[in-house]
Amino acid sequence: MTENEQLLARVAEKARNTPPWGWASLPAPVDAATLTRAEAALGFSLPPLLADLYLRIGDGGFGPEYGLLPLLDGPPADEPAAVVQYLANRADARKDPHWPWPEGVLPISHWGCAMYACVDCHSPQAPVLLFEPNADDADHAWFIDAPSLTEWLRAWADGTGWYEQTAEDMDLAPWTDVRIRTTRTGA
Image 1 (cartoon, one colour):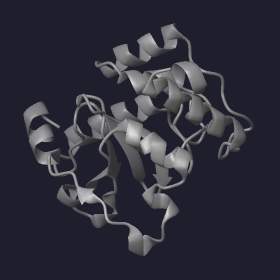
Image 2: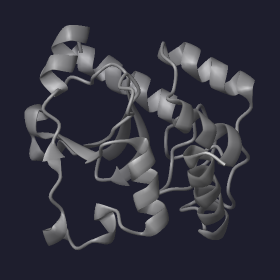
Image 3: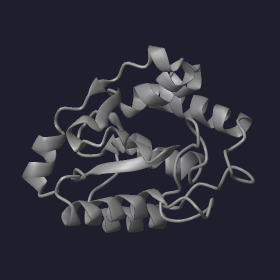
Image 4: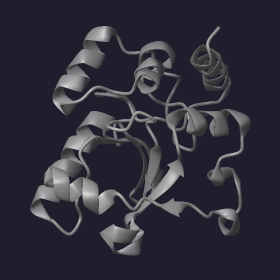
C-alpha cells in the first residue's frame, strides 16, 4: 500500500467516525463525470490527492473544523461549493484589484469569519493556504497552513493541526507569493 493509500485509509476512517459539521451524514463520493465537470469549470485539474478525497471518501463534510466544501454542489445549502466559491472569488478580484484571488487557489474548507483553507492546485506539492481577510490588507491575508495537502490531512488525522492548539500557539508563515501569482495571472 502506497503512502497516499495509507493516508486515504486514515482519512476515510476518521471521516466515518467524525460527525460532519452541519450535515446529516457524510455525503457520497462524487463520480468521475462530476470531477470532470468541476475541472472544466475551474480551468485546471485538481491535485491527485484532492481528487481522490472527493472520488473515494465523500463530497465534502469531513476534515478540519467545518470540513471540506462540496465540490460542485450539495449540503449544507448555506455554504457554496468549492468551485462556486473559487469562481466567485476570481470574479470579485477582477472588480476589486486590491483584493486579488490567485488563479488555481481553490478554497476547500470554510473556517468561519470569511476565512478559508485553500489548495494551491498549480503547485506540485499542493500546499494548503489560509486566507484570512480580517487583517484588512490583501498582502497580509495569506498564510501557509501546511506545505502540502498530504501534511494538512495528516495533521487533521493526528489531531495536531494549528486549529487544535490555543490561539497563542498559532504562528503561520505568510504566503509571500500572493502578489507574484496575482500580478502574473491578472487577479
